Length: 327
Image (cartoon, rainbow, N blue to C red):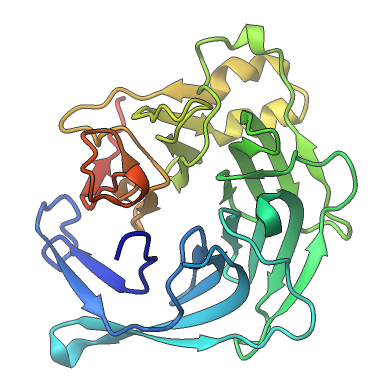
């Protein structure tokens, strides 16, 4: 049915099962589903061997704020097949406002942090919430944090990436005036009262050496203390296919006052082989080595068929991007 949000769950098995991550062999398995209900713009974070899903927007455009736990169960007796047992997490009386298209990340397998998104009546949100999972996942508790100025602008379609320890990086997104952003913010939740810190720099000094503003991109922590930013779209909904590296050691030195590091923070990558098409609002994750990033789905450019929902074209291809270190 046109416009229907899916409630199916799929697993991709990549490689030959003996650590050959470079193999092009992969297979899909559809898991039994039905819950959580169909939605889009939700977040789904890996916490150990458990998935934590929050929020999203359903078929009727209703914003959601439910929190789900998906226990990943591998059944080796069936040829290393997998299933996920979902249950609604008890979080008590306090929870973030309903939303979709927010940013989320897992911190040290103990916390989920979310920021922003599209709330009721289509308004952009700028609040930050922490989900404490220290009760062995039997229950959780949400707390609003980071509400002292300065604060990132309200936005949606941005990314929040854990960079180790108790820190995370926010990048990009679409603001309340539908402006598309490329600002960088840091948050450290180890502080008693966590505060956001913007990394401000003179744009003229890095012109051409940093990604243009974008929304609906991905930002994945990879090996070597770097964030890989891919794709997204600009304020005119022109989609992108570029790959950028954000160097975290340079970023943290810049934060500490070393202004000369600003030109080392960003670097555009050269891509060999079959590059994924221009796309936005896709999914991306990295393997345990930190060297292979997998990119799936999203909205893509190309011929739109009349039968396609709302004039949008979605992609169903899975791409493997292998990062190669040049010495």
